Amino acid sequence: MYYIIYLSAGTNWFSQPELEELLAISAKNNMRDNITGLLLYAEGNFIQLLEGEEKAVKESYDRISQDERHKGITPIANGVIEHRIFPEWAMGFKTIGSFRDTPFKDFLNPEYRHKSNLLPVTLLNSFIKTAKI
Image (cartoon, rainbow, N blue to C red):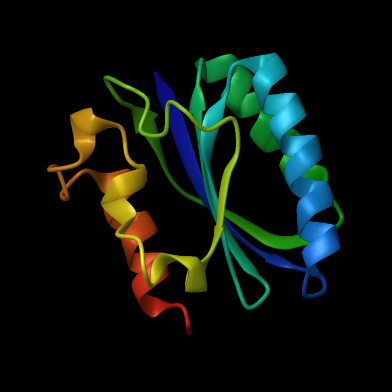
């Protein structure tokens, strides 16, 4: 299983309807391509983890890189993992404030809930901790 994590900034802050539209399209594409993952949003910034077959993930990342709603798209990690980290989510999405009441680990594949040193999990947690709530 291949994954990539990237950071980006929106060219504008996304409204709730704009985020919902983005998520609907992303979920449809990810289901088609057998990609799962998580998208976190805070104050105009995104971090996303995509996971699946390497070719599909790289093609999805290439499409995202061409999306004019993003700027400064920066890959920060990629590699191979044994199991999907978010197997249930064709496109899991959270705004950072929604993690106040629910621990991040509750959304992880049970295989990874106690492996806080796993690089993708560490990066996602870092984004959550540094984002303003």
